[in-house]
Each structure stands twice: as structure tokens, then as C-alpha cells.
Length: 143
Image (cartoon, rainbow, N blue to C red; front, side):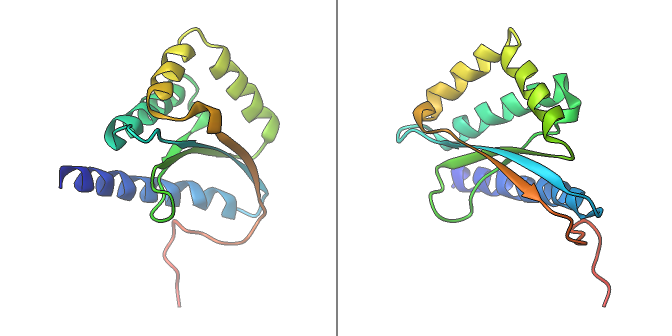
């Protein structure tokens, strides 16, 4: 029961943060989204796995606030996945920031923590283009 409540709280938090981030591409300009999907090992406890990702994201956002990274968890399909993502108005700036994160002396500590809970041989990275859509998820729709 506690596991279900914990997952529900994380899911609601992720959905809220996703709405905040999603509003960023509605300002009439193209944005880019980088995602990294991790698949949990069969014996990995969900709460520990999501905490490892959250710790990494918190460390990244503290050291590189421009990263504004977030976590997403699926509501269907393979629920033993976690996605880390960020949205940016440029690709170059984010690649530079990501390189700094990976080169930092403290990064291996977070990488090792992820290796305890996730199948690191099956990490999936993707870049997405978010074309201007005139959509705002952060403001109420007026009829």
C-alpha cells in the first residue's frame, strides 16, 4: 500500500512539473527536448530507483540551474521505466551543459547509484523537436 501511495505521489509531482515544462514550447518558438529512459532491473525496488534518479536531477539542477531537468514515470506500458528530460530553446547549450555534468568529479557517484537499480546497457537517449504550437498548458482555456 505504501508503495502505491509513493508511486502516486511521485506521478502527481511529475505530471505537475511536466505541465510547467510543457508550457515552455508554446511561446511561438521551436524548443528541443532531450530524454534519457532508464529501465529498472527486475529486482530493483521502485522507490530506491526513483530516489537515485531524483538525487541525480537535484544535483544537476543545483549545479547547473539552466538544465532544469525533470523526471517522468509512465502511467501505462512498462511501468518499470523512468525518464529524465529537459526542454531547451537551443541544442548547443544543452549539449555543453550535459558535457560539463558528465565530466564533473562527482558524476560517477550518481552513475554508480543508477547502476544499482537500472539496466545501464539499455539506456535510451532521444532528442525531440517541439515546434511552435500556440498551446499553453499552464493557463486555463477560455471558452
